[in-house]
Structures are given as C-alpha cells and as structure tokens.
Length: 108
Image (cartoon, rainbow, N blue to C red; front, side, top):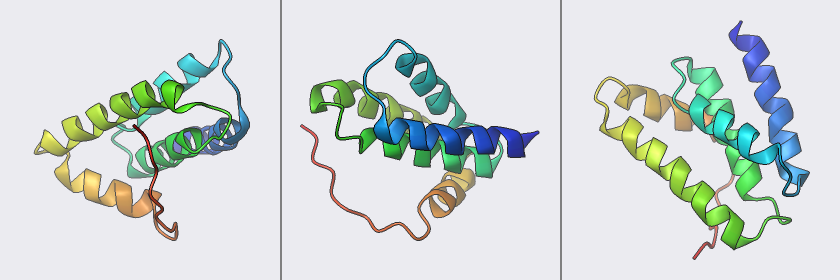
C-alpha cells in the first residue's frame, strides 16, 4: 500500500511546484505535513520533498509561506524530540535530500 501513497506524494510534489492559492491547497498541505510523521521512511521522505517543492513555489508569497514553514518545523522538532523517531529523522532527511543541492531559502 505504501508505494501508492508514495506515488501520490510525487504527483503532489509537482502540483505544489506550480499551484496557486486555492481551496484545495490547505487540505493537501495539511495531509503532506501529517505524512512527514509516517512510520514508513519512504513516505515521510517524499512528504518532505513535496513540502520543499511547495515552499519553493514562486507563486506563493513569503507571507503565505511563513505559517507553512512554522508548521513543518514544528513537526520536525516534535520528531527530533521523540526518542523512538530520532533514527527515522536521520534516514528521512537522507532519503529526502540525497542528490539535492542545498540553497539558502530566505524567509522572514
């Protein structure tokens, strides 16, 4: 079942890269944030990549992105503080960002 969820998140990644504000965006965003805490590493990693795509979307203003970043970071900190999930966090970011070059994202 998880390969289907992973594929859906990959589609969501491309949607997030080019979407504008609409009534579906908050629901899709909330679902992706929830999946960052999934117990399957591949799902959590693709959720992070999908959210990264959304936060890099030039159609969304920093004003719109700021609360999104705060919510994602709150989930990341929760995962990092959960001793059972600490190993998963390391694997998550290794899977999510292997091969991606890091650039500074300027948000206020």
